[in-house]
Structure formats: structure tokens, C-alpha cells
Amino acid sequence: MSSSSRRSRSRRAGTSVSSSSSRSISEDQISDLLSKLEALLPDAQARNGAQRGPASRVLQETCSYIRSLHREVDDLSETLAALLASDAVTAEQAAVIRSLLM
Image 1 (cartoon, rainbow, N blue to C red):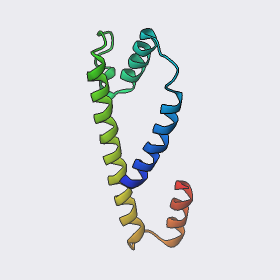
Image 2 (image 1 turned 90 degrees about the horizontal axis):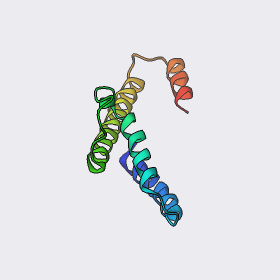
Image 3 (image 1 turned 180 degrees about the horizontal axis):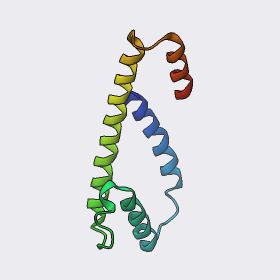
């Protein structure tokens, strides 16, 4: 996926978030959401039972993790594109792979 696709998707997501931001969120809800977010991070199991860190750290780690996932997707996309363009894959195999990705 290209970075421009991600940016346009981010903009669309941002507009939906801003329209719902008129509702207020309690401190307990924010704390609960941060705990759930932190649980999704790869290092969460290592910290299991440890007290949640500050919100800024959770958000920074989340952003870093999302960036690393985007890099991984970009790398895998490039690898797959190169493979599909090579002679190592038959036309039938390429068609199957493309149908799985759609």
C-alpha cells in the first residue's frame, strides 16, 4: 500500500473522529481505552501485571508500532510485486495470488 493511500485513509478516518468528538469522554473511559490499546502492543505480555505507563508513552509506542507495521506491509508488497513479475511464478499462480489479495 502506498503512503498516499494511507494518508487519504487517515484523512477519512480523521473526519469521522472529529465529527464524534463533541461527545465528552470520562477519565475512566480514557484510562480503559489506553489499557486496551497497550494490551495490543507486542511488549504488553512482557509487562503483564505491571502498572500501565503514562498515556504519552502508550501513544508513542502505539505510533511506533503502527509505523513499523506500515514498513513491513510496504516491504512485503514490494517483495510480492517482484515475485509476481519474475519468472518464478506462473500466470495461473499469479492469478490465484491476486484473487486472494482482492
